[in-house]
Amino acid sequence: MRSNLKYVQIIKRKGKPYAYYRRGGQRQRIEGDPHSPAFLASYARIHASFEELPPIPNGGFHDLCEEYLRSQDYLGLKEGTRQEYRLDIDKLRSVFGPMEIYEIDRSLLKEYMGSLSNKKGTANNHLRMLKKLFNFAVEVDYLKASPANGIKPYKGGTHLPWSDEEVASFMEAESTPTVLKQVMAFALYTGQRQGDLINMKWSHINNGRLKVVQQKTGVELWVPIHPTLQQIISAMPKNNIHVLTTPTNLKWTASNLKLKFKTASRAAGIPENKVFHGLRKTATVKLIEAGCTFDEVKAITGHKTSSMVELYARGTNQERLASQAMLKLVESVKLKSEV
Image (tube, rainbow, N blue to C red; front, top):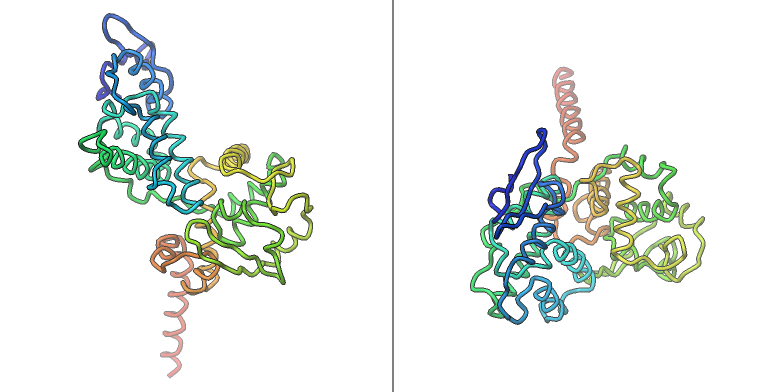
């Protein structure tokens, strides 16, 4: 348990483990569950307070993040990608921000990945971002090598689709605000990413179709509006140029929507491993299970390649395909017996 972290001492009292940072005759309690990101954040703050850091410019993880956000590596990305990266960076700064970048070693990063073992999709996204940040640090000569090199992502670490029962629980919960039910409906019936949903305007709706210019890919789509979604749209007030708004009729920000959606999900009893982006996968799976070809799915969701659609749908429609295969076998046997 966390024995690979420097200066950490684990003490058990009445069968319960407590972690302390012990150094130079001093001892400080490390807050948080030893298997949580909060624990690592507490450790990082205490460790940084004990270090006599040399005056290396831009030597802190927080400074590295700021410099990356000002770089062309980041500014040259699509707006949607920048928003996704910024959310991941802000989360990583809450954990590693107080530390100098040369203090963050491979063992600490592996500990962090372990703390997210029940959120494999999030863990893989954060690992991807850590690799980008440390590769950038190498490029600007702040490090000789990246401590994230060789750390493998979790297998199957993609965002899980929501089940029909989970969707119903969210939509039917009294605690779920109407504006979030509207957001979920748009996600399920258009298959679009969060950033594209919050940018939708009333002027984008025309003749039963919804115009989408995807931030991440630049692809322009005209998505037919599902009858169920049309009913929801018809009942929505037009208090903003944007279709989806907060309870106070303001445009959602990515961070605010993510926070509010997460809070509503937990209140509705949705497991922590089901997140907003999983709704895009749910929409993709529903299209495939309805008999759509991969090209037809891409025409709705805007995925660039069929391989990505196949990855999203892999394994989720096994039961339906198996049933169809068995029916074909039954029909084949019938035909042979009639001959």
